Length: 493
Image (cartoon, rainbow, N blue to C red):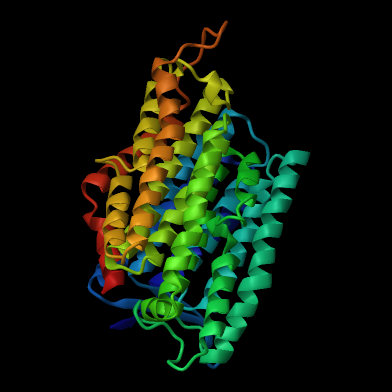
């Protein structure tokens, strides 16, 4: 049943109004951060209030503007929306506290601009989550790109400006050069840009030209460059010049999740499982993103800089989400969608840990962290837990992802299932190869010559507490995956 609900509008207004009030409170740091916290909690509360209706099988909708017949700016909450919305709204709360400790600990400049843009990025992200059609999604997708540009360029030096230019050029060029023309052609072919009500049918008529659909599909797949698929991925490592809270936002909460969420939404609700199966779009997509999974993992192995290693890990892990959906099997789709949540909590933990290490020690390279785990046990313990999730080890969240993907692979015909299983097993070994040495070196490695770690201790509590909470959530949703899986089941019908 479809229910008209203003809650969708309220969820959208919470971060928007919060950002405006933050700008007015710039001269009062405590008040500014208090406003950010209130806005985050408000958005989370509104999102959670929609959960009972969505899990009851209802869709919440709210139309903002009508532009043309079949073309509106409309919001919608369904099972897939709630996966992203619950993750983004909950992690924003943790990010507010963490950012306060990080930005104050390093005495960063322009903290008011930082907090305002952070809130605006969440405004765009929640708009993408609750988009009812491709046009609305496109508008909020671009808002995320624009509002995160100042965050990437935060340090205002040559390196940050270069990273920010690459970031904005990649994302806006692909969106306008591939996604926008595809969106126009989809509207011409179908007369609508509204998402389908289930994942089976899609919106294309039965007699649509197969070649045209394939071209449109490729444009959409590559047009959402925030998903980090190779070769359109290099903006992501370049964006690591930003402060660590921004990196956490980019990799776990807003930007890349906007990319993979948009990609999976279009795959399932514009093209649909039946159309993708009929035109053989699924398996080629799975093979295509498998290259990203393996190549990015190999590159991560070569990186000594911790944030760079985590960046290439993100490039690899994002493609698990698209891979799962591209399998077009029930377990595969479930594994891909649940990884939106599993990756978010684990990856934000890893970046929080990287930031805490930098604030406490000013060290960026893994080779400099030998023996540091004895001085910062909570930080490196959290890093180890999140690493296990990325690897896919039980009982942490990532295990659920890998298990579902393996089960989904077994439903494929031979020889495809053999290839996908080999990809998953190889990538898991590579995950171990670039994550395990970090924790091992920290707890069991030798200190660098001449390094005594005098005066070094854990980062401020405002940073350590959020990273520990995020790590514990990764464990909880690994042991008790039922809550997030309930939204996935709603998607599957």
